[in-house]
Image (cartoon, rainbow, N blue to C red; front, side):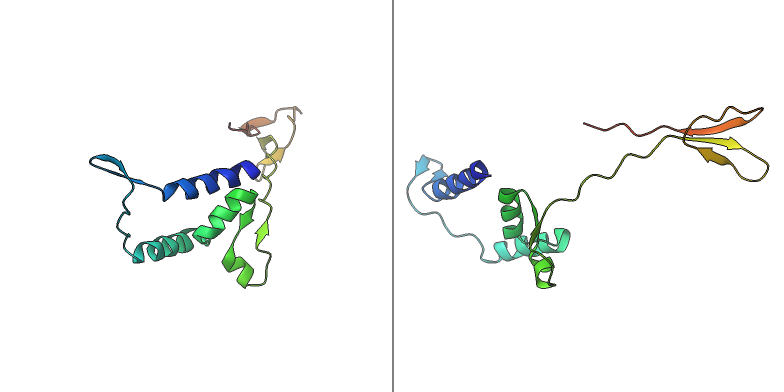
Length: 125
């Protein structure tokens, strides 16, 4: 966590020192951007992710899911990311008189006819 904070701190400290021009790196101040740019980025982030830009930065540093709108509703500001769901089990389906019967293990009784097999999902890396 501390290395993420140090990277962010370094970028913010070095970012305002100089800028590139046609002649190379110059110390003169660069013109300020449109004042509405930050508000537009903030609105875009809030509409699409339900988080502010600051929430994304704080969540990146703390490695948690942080959200100001969630905190305004009375919930906690930062919480741990949800864990991954459990992998589904293998399913074997056989035809019967009415509708198919499905089992977690192969069912080899008499003249049952296997009509479908859903293998357990493999993790994607």
